[in-house]
Amino acid sequence: MPKKLIDGAVRGDVWRCNPFAIRVATDPDHPLYDERNELPLDDSLARNVAANGVLQPIIVARDDDDAVWVVDGRQRLKAACAVRDEQERQGCAEKLLLRVPCVLRRGDDRRLYGALVSANEFRRDDTILGKARKAQRMADLGASVDDIAESFGCGRDTIKNWVALLGASAPVRRAVEADKIPPTAGYRLARLDGAAAQKQALDELLIDGPKRGAARRATAKVKASKATKAPKTKTEKPKLGRATTKLMRLAKRMEKHCAEQTTVEAKRAADFCSLALRSAIAELIGSGDLR
Image 1 (cartoon, rainbow, N blue to C red):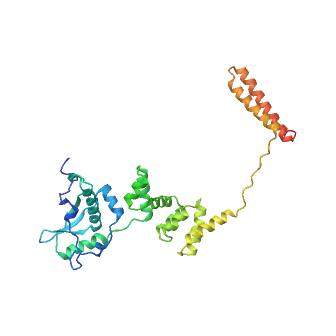
Image 2 (cartoon, one colour):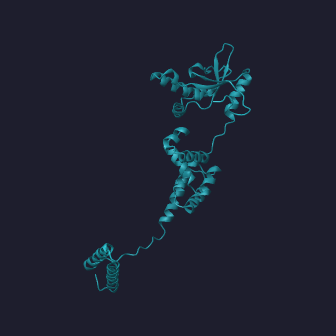
Image 3 (tube, rainbow, N blue to C red):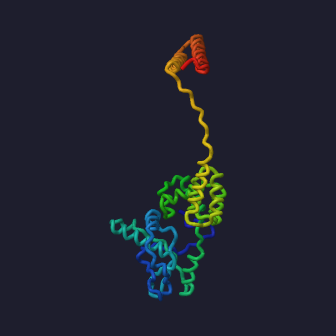
């Protein structure tokens, strides 16, 4: 493999460390203390790290005593420690144990704490429809629902709701994107059949406002209005009598006989007889003389 992978790129210091070798500041007076240290372990993140490793490097700093402290990536580090601990408990080989990528950050306490803040405050969450499109893209590439849920750190039902939202009408999707209705309301409206029904329910929801159960009431109202429409009239087929049934069976047997004929003349004669028999049956049924 060539040393230079990207034109103009320079080599940097990226370590791959035992996650337990990195310290986390738990003293509120420490310059790198962050109250998010107290957050519990995210099980979905730990499962993702176990499957894919730590994809985003952890930013660390070294103090005067050569101790390495985490600047950014506390939750990733916590998940990596849990995964590594489980690997060691199962007797995993040393070369297969999880290591985390780390980037060393230099500077005084003020600059390091500024990096801690900047690494988190400038992140922008993806929209629901953005996540839905990515989930659909993963499915198109062959990923299962479980794989997609693991990548997003959520449940199977959430993934199914996201993908269902992609099938909603354009007004519903635009309302979700503009935060006019919550995503949960969008999921419910997407289940209605047809763009017209979804638009009607959306209008009802926007009039009702962001009240508890508003989406449920709007969809129920649309379904009720569709149910009150005049049902389609079904044309009842006339009941056939025993004589008619026997003649119809005879006609089917004659058709089968036609198909078994080998010569052109015999097949033509059989077809004519079959057609004549069916025409006679239809005429008798229509006149009411045959039941």
